Length: 189
Ligand SMILES: C[S@@+](CC[C@H](N)C(=O)[O-])C[C@H]1O[C@@H](n2cnc3c(N)ncnc32)[C@H](O)[C@@H]1O
Image (cartoon, rainbow, N blue to C red; front, side, top):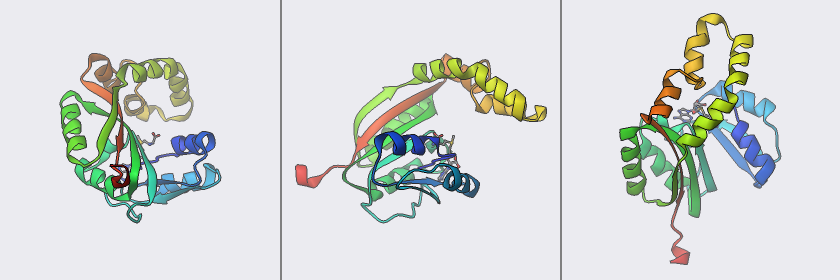
């Protein structure tokens, strides 16, 4: 959910080889790009809102949601949709950033949504290490491809060292969490 430019979905398709996988994103441009270039057996991309998913109830074994949920108007509505589309025993695999206070709200939302939190990990340090390792490459790409007038906002978005989001992660004002949640399976209780 929130598959963006499709790199994550393609990675999962290639290396975990699910029978089918559907990427959903709000942006028609991103969905078109993915359907042209992110090609793997059983992988397709559709346009839609993660808060009102165009899928039948109990139709997925797993929902993967990476760095997208902070964009949603209502996290509660998104989580209710995840509960609806997951089969009993299905899992939500989640990762995203939040403000310090937002982490507490997120935990309350997880607790209230009816799914069981099986794992939760603060991966802020891992994300910072990854950003540091990729910093020079991203700066080169921005320099080569992006008009100078857009450099500053793009550097913030890309988490370039010294910019606002990077500094927020470094100071602890912004935290990056990953979590695994399960929909209970009445057959196993
Ligand atoms: C930062 S990108 C992350 C993309 C991808 N998950 C990844 O890890 O590379 C966030 C994506 O969420 C999508 N998005 C934001 N709000 C959405 C919504 N309500 N429904 C579906 N997608 C949404 C955006 O269009 C964008 O492609």
